[in-house]
Image 1: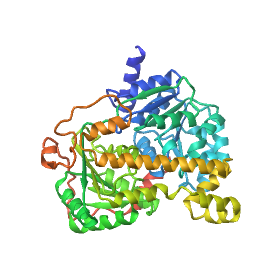
Image 2 (image 1 turned 135 degrees about the vertical axis):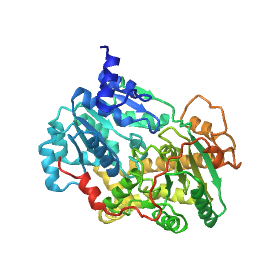
Image 3 (image 1 turned 45 degrees about the vertical axis):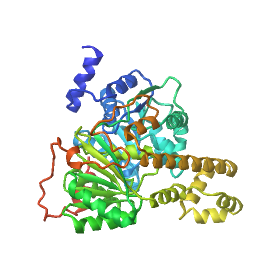
Image 4 (image 1 turned 30 degrees about the vertical axis):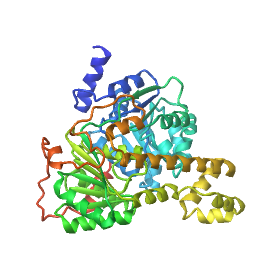
Length: 488
């Protein structure tokens, strides 16, 4: 049996699939040849299978750096449902006693998930150093560039941590990366010059792209309700405001028969996880969420993603709309835009970045910095940069550059919203792809022309959950959590 046949045989025996998805076999083969790899693969192409396959096939421990608790728990649960019990998430949900027990027996585990901040913990680092790590995975690796400079500075130290761990074989995976983001990732991770890049198009041709400009908030609410009554579900609506996320969730509950719940950082972990599971199992038709929801979520039948507020940048936008149509069926992505969105996003983009006056104050008064860092995102960021040995002069340069980059990204997002021609080709150009697609009926809305939802979804085998509409979804989190945290 040659290597290719052996890999396909293992894929079917272990994972139940007869074929690899685009890019998977290329990534796995690269890793088996001991080449660190950056995989930029479209949303929904099963990036997690690449490192799961490597770990099961080589029987070597895999350490996965993951950005969100919900993403970790979802992937831990998926592995457990596949029969893999040797998996653990080292995060703040573990009690001190449980964490100590896990660290004492870390060699028991085949897959170890943790946030980048956890690598600062000396006990965690010491335990990892006792392992012969087969593969270090940076999941959602675009976060290195997108989040590291702003509010997750530990992402900037992953290269140093990787070196401390002995420069293990590394896989960085993401769905989106411009040339600048790719350069950031490879530089900050200190990947060897011989790393392999496996990159496929960001294009998801089964997602129709649309943008609607609305004159005011009331008109936007009315249009949202109108769309929800026409669109096949399930669906996602993204908000940039927790308050409006809650308000619109309540309005949808009042005005439609849809089962809907909110998901944002203002909810407890138990509430967020329960909402996520109810959506995955079909108990909810719709989730109103902030950007914290959806990363890595494995639900194939989402038919629409609506952005109630324009996103800050095209990278996040493409990540978020990519949660639709993973079953290959026709889906749609709609931005509902009014002029207030640009000011909201500019304010949010700059919120966590300290200005020159703040930096001067913190430099002159360490006490003021210490006090402010308990409540202020920007002060906390300055504190972490100080701990990393970055001077105030360098900080000012970094934050000035980040403001420029964020403003440029916002301008690109506005250009997309206002683009009169094929939106799909606009996205391909933004991500440095040379190919041009031919515009056709189910491609996108041109300019501000009208589009026909019935025509777009004419050939979809609509899958609806058969929940009686008078039966609300369960709100009991205990059963979900008992399942999640059950003993191995």
